[in-house]
Length: 199
Ligand code: ADP
Ligand code: 5GP
Image (cartoon, rainbow, N blue to C red):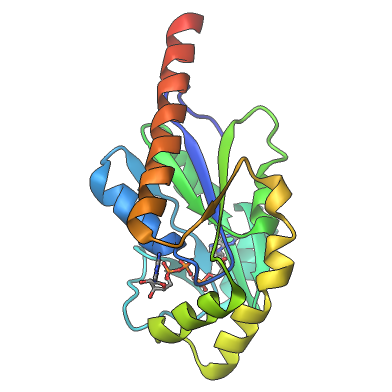
């Protein structure tokens, strides 16, 4: 994974339903330089999702074949489905853009093994498990069983907060967005200054 010193790599993780997708889309809308890493997944598309935009939706056979070909920087099994970050997609984006990875804690651990790379790692949480469940229900994109599974993963997911640089509570969406925006703009400024010094 090679990247221009002036471009930053942000990892945004959270228990499912906290608000990662909402926030990454807001960042991408406001800042043209930021691109979202489009993962591969074996789960079925939701009614509002577009293949190639929200995810690359593939069969389990296709995903396994990509694992065998070592096509992923990282992948994980989450709620009975596979999710992975394709090397090809990331390399294409990274050469000229800042990038945001919306991945779970397992993927974050795998990417952290690239010691030569600097990731800005942000972990989002809700202020309670009940609030997470409310959001999953309100999102209306998961069955009752899936909502239970996702909200029950709250405790396991938050055990990994220590792997992250920043922990943010997504209570008020505008406040949370502003906090993340400040973090990434500061990091970008620091990278840019550093790149000028070492030139
Ligand atoms: P994730 O990508 O982490 O699974 P989403 O971005 O899909 O989560 O958000 C889950 C639901 O919560 C969506 O319906 C979204 O509109 C809503 N949501 C996001 N942030 C907030 C917030 N701060 N307060 C209330 N609802 C929120
Ligand atoms: P969802 O099914 O709600 O879109 O995503 C479920 C979980 O999978 C979320 O925590 C999301 O961050 C994670 N995820 C999405 N893409 C990837 C990926 O490429 N790798 C890993 N490790 N996790 C991912």
